[in-house]
Length: 96
Image (cartoon, rainbow, N blue to C red):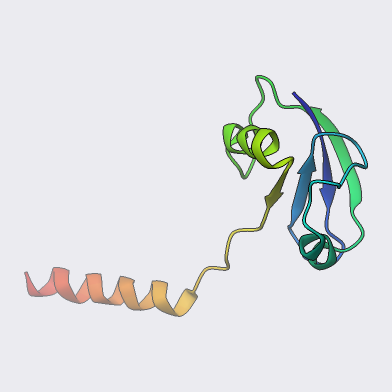
């Protein structure tokens, strides 16, 4: 399955996969407005391929059902919550 991957100029780390190069007819208008003018990154064959940050089967299923797939960056780590959890675990291990 071939698809084209576009990078967002407005949303850092957002990528839009479409079945045909330059065909955004299946992408909702509101999403295209948020995404901004797409910048072509590459055209790839998804068959037998692994993708870095997303499950290739999820991409293929979305392309087949919706005509596009939107990849968003992972949410930023909440450093304060991570620190609190680490401290709580340390305190608990000392009281056992």
